[in-house]
Image (tube, rainbow, N blue to C red; front, side, top):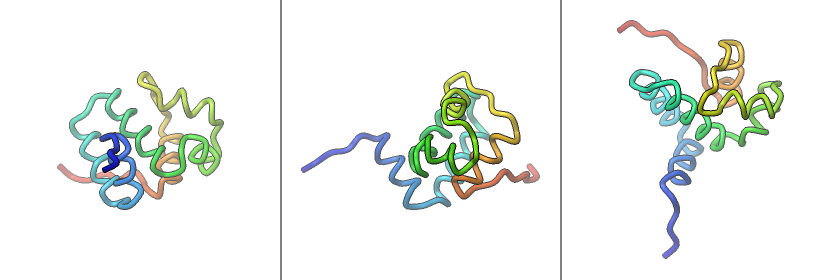
Length: 96
């Protein structure tokens, strides 16, 4: 029986179920540190076309996007909105 890594399984889950991907990102945003948020966005980028595909869809430079999604990345709000839109997601505000 073939096995797959947890990372691959997570990425495949995001690809199959964008609602699950949104719930995952919301949970990380609520509880996570900056590094965890960047890791979550990288995983999601892998699920939704890879960094190159997301960069193209978001009209961003791929090299810059790799740096933006790095562990020390700190995307501007405009870039974050474009990245999420390329993944079929958006930023929303909810009351506590």
